[in-house]
Length: 199
Image (cartoon, rainbow, N blue to C red; front, side, top):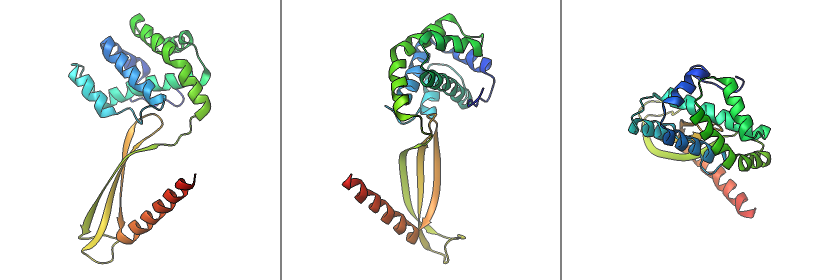
């Protein structure tokens, strides 16, 4: 399927969805819809895996990620194409015959309640594929050896950024800067802040 990357086939993902208790699947759909409505920065994969584990559902991270990706994909498709709940359910049954009536009814219910709002927001935002910065952490360190620091025992700043992409998946990016690079970085942020104050 174009734009949908799964570690297994759609039928396998749907079979995993069918193992979920109705309330847990409903909670997962709610989390995805809240993310897509931009009321939440990301669908936290680890948090969802923990929820599944606490409910006694033993699925690995890839399986949980595939469930989130599949439902996010179809909710986005439905929002972009302004599909009705019936049309969304029809699309889901076209992609797999493994869906139960109960799970499809749940998707129908959630899309009926949230679909129009999500479609309206997608029209306004036009789905830019830009991630969001969720968190940034830093620490000051002392270099013992490095290819970018000229002398040993030089200070450096290590930065870890938590970034949510448009599918809601969280990734981490880290990098190190010399003190001079950090001062330049800081100066640029101060310039951005001063420009934002004039808006």
